[in-house]
Length: 349
Image 1 (cartoon, rainbow, N blue to C red):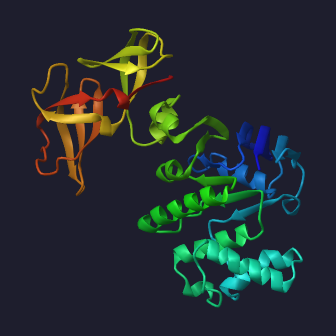
Image 2 (image 1 turned 60 degrees about the vertical axis):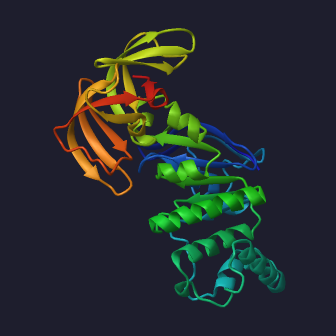
Image 3 (image 1 turned 90 degrees about the vertical axis):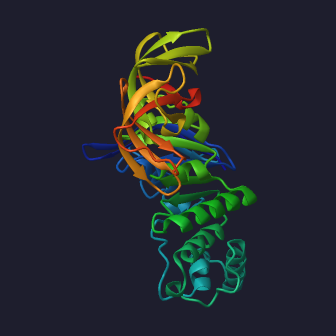
């Protein structure tokens, strides 16, 4: 079922946590609210759940106005950051808890709880206690407990933040597969850009209580509309350059002593802020090919799979990654930087 926010505001006294937010989550999609701490994303999620009521605006779920309804009057379930499992209950009892509170009979609740555990791959774990489970298994129990209520909308609040890096990667894949297999409408909150890009159909980036930009992961990474987005969605190098339009679809961007043609239909001529992705910089020993940007290695770090370099250039100090770990370049080395058009982005000042 769809979720729609229209000009929603949330105030706490004189502080505005969410300011005039409007968006739609289409049925059967996974949409992530992404942003730094304090941006308003968790408050927005809690307003969908009915745990917070808006100060102004309208919230609809499946076309029904739920703006002033309590959490128990909305057909939503939420998976919390802490999982909120009852330590004195078995896994089966934890999953059945919400059903029992909804006056579902014991036999039906037990059957649906077992089906929920099977859905998340935990058949046979019925009698275990939460303390006997790994972090990933506890997270699956929390998901099963939410799923058995058969909600119209499933909400996730930073569900992977307590897991280590490898388990986070595994669990985000499992959540995405489950959402697609069951056709769930999911709203997901995280501050982790990679996590958001891996699981989402669409991402809504929030900043200071407002929506900074929304779109597909590819759109936000490759076409950030603001300097904040360019910095927040992955690594980027801010640089000042000049822009000259070539035709309706292309511009020529000049950075220091080099120029590059970039696909862009909106940037005006003149000075502009340019974001350069580190992976779009090929680092060659000087003098390099014609038209390359000259630079000098300022710092070099070995990270096993790749090198990281800070490079002083006429366009500023640029951060670059290089897969050639067998030939590291020490500080002081003169280099030539070849920029890939796909990683050079003109952003709105």
